Amino acid sequence: MKNIVIIGAGPAGRFAAMDAAEKSNNVTLIEKRHIGGKCLNHACMVVCALADVAKHVSESKNFNDLGIVESQIKLNYTKIAQKIRETQKRIRPILTAETTGTGVEYVRGEATVDAERKVVVVDDEDEYPYDKLLVCTGSSPRLPNIPGVENAYTYKDTLKFKEIPEKLVIIGGGSTAAEYANIFSCFGSQVDVLCRSSFLKMLDDSRTEEYIVANLLKNTIVHENVEIKEITDRSVITNYGEIEGTVLLATGVVPNSDIVKDIVEVDKKGNIIVDSHMQTSNPDIYAAGDVIGGLLSTPVSRMEGMVAINNIMDNEVEADYSLVPLTITLNYDVSYLKGDEVNNNGKELAIPGAAGPGSFWNMLTGKTGLTKENIDLESGKINNILAITPSSNIALPYMVKAIKDGDADFGNFIEIHPSTDGIFKLTQYFKRYL
Image (cartoon, rainbow, N blue to C red):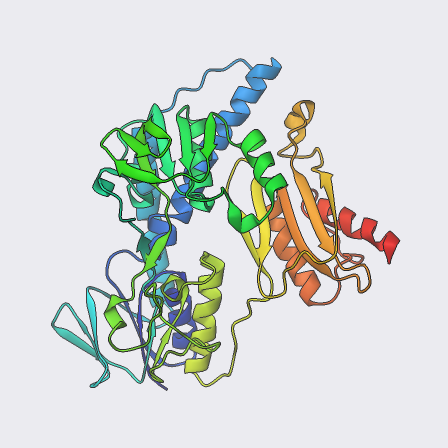
């Protein structure tokens, strides 16, 4: 049995804590604010909740345009925000009970680390000794060095809007920018997205970018290669002129690594440096999740937390970043792969999305999504997949599992339709060339 202290009760820390406690270790989980981390309290769950409303508004408008439903949607943003907060408050005690039920000691408070004595001090009072320490302190919004940046909102502030902005200016070109552009454009805002370089450059796919802007983002103008000169209380001043609107920053995150920055090695951005076992430069300290940088997503953080805790418990495990499915939450999810084994060195083929649940009533406008695969014709190995469909966030993890198991044809797999069928169809098509 080991004394294990974990700082941060987000996905990485909480799952690691429960696993270690169930294996009879003495585990203390310390959280500064709310259990569930950024995912539940500020980011993923908030985006998903708002996106559900946005999708309802979008579908209602489409039904009206088709003349099959007569309705008028009137949104109450204050009520939306209130109900999201109420739901979060209901979830937190469930997570707490789930966590402490495994034997974890859950402590609320501000933690500091005394590495020489190997103790964590909470609120300058209580001390918790450790054999091994796991740091899962997450990340915070990055505030760029722009005059007037204090006038802008971040993802932490979106539930503070008193009403839906008539005009919204989003600074940033990644997933968060796209998700909030989708949400508020569906809510009726005129949205301008200002990108320092290109929009959604992590997709490395101009055709997909064009499809998303043309078909998934309503009332949205994307501006690329923009230099931000100043943010005012009602606009952004750029090298192309002034763009009016409420300003929302989607400029990435910074790691919350100050707690150990003088104890372990960090990189230029402040990310805690770890090896493939999640061990830091201090052999008794491990780290996982957003605080180490890399691919920032809840499932990745959870995986890293489990890798760390397994190594803390002397089970030699390495993090697997070979194929990582990621999703941009829009009216159709945009799901894609990142990882060490992802490439575009083979033959590529794309097909339109099928007309099924979630897309049938967009068939008449041709907005049913698309699926792309890149495959090595000699080996038959799938190099890359990108899918824009209502079920892509389900399909891609299945495909990653199939690829890793060496059986990507789904020949003996009966699915719930429609989930993987678009990707399966492409894989079957490629077999003609093998």
